[in-house]
Structure formats: structure tokens, C-alpha cells
Amino acid sequence: MTIELIISLIALALALFAAIRTFFDGEKVKNQPVTEIQPKAKREKETEDIIKKTLQSIEEYRK
Image 1 (tube, helix red, strand yellow):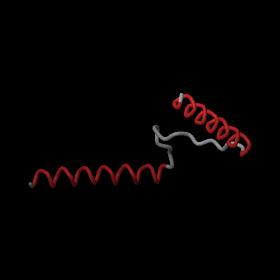
Image 2 (cartoon, helix red, strand yellow):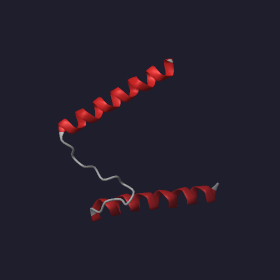
Image 3 (cartoon, one colour):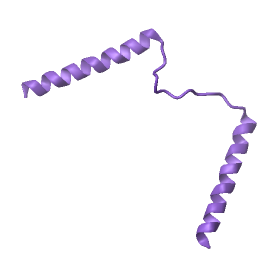
Image 4 (spheres, helix red, strand yellow):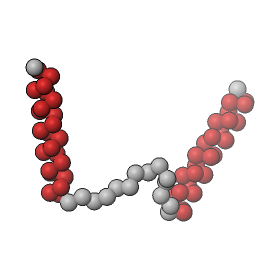
């Protein structure tokens, strides 16, 4: 039980260290996706395409 406690405390310390380091360094995490701002018109067109594809797949499934 003592070993488990020590391992969990080490894991907690490493997690806190990683969180604090990224907070103060201000660097992006390598696995974090890049978010790009898209114009509203482009997003609406994409949603229309998705809706059309969804309806087509439902119709094909019913056949």
C-alpha cells in the first residue's frame, strides 16, 4: 500500500509540474489541434452539405 501511495504521489506531482510548465511557458501542446476562425457563410455551407449527405444516406438506407 505504501508503494502505491508513493507512485500515485509521484504521478500527481508530474501532472502538476506539466500543467504548471505549460501555463507559464505559454507554449502550445504538440497534440493540440489548431483552431482556425472560419467565416460564417462557409460554416453554413458546410452544414448544408452535411444535412444533404445525411438525408441521402437515410434515403439509401430505406431502399
